[in-house]
Length: 55
Image 1 (cartoon, helix red, strand yellow):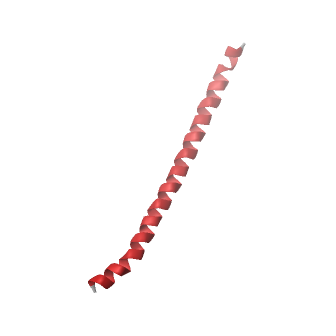
Image 2 (cartoon, helix red, strand yellow; image 1 turned 180 degrees about the horizontal axis):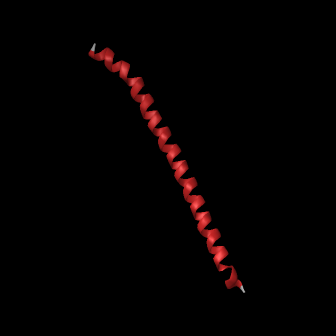
Image 3 (cartoon, rainbow, N blue to C red; image 1 turned 60 degrees about the vertical axis):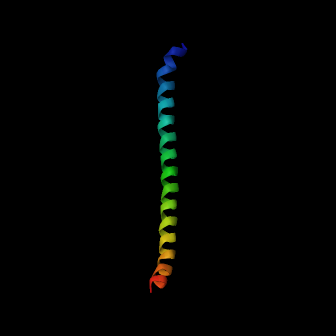
């Protein structure tokens, strides 16, 4: 009788994996975007100092 539910169980498992992958990718994307913005802010912060040094 349990074999009747294997298809449903497998579909739920695959759907759960797809959702987990999506969440994982979105969190990673958000983290990388924050790192890129921090690098950009750091570069902008350092740029006026370089202009003063080169005069």
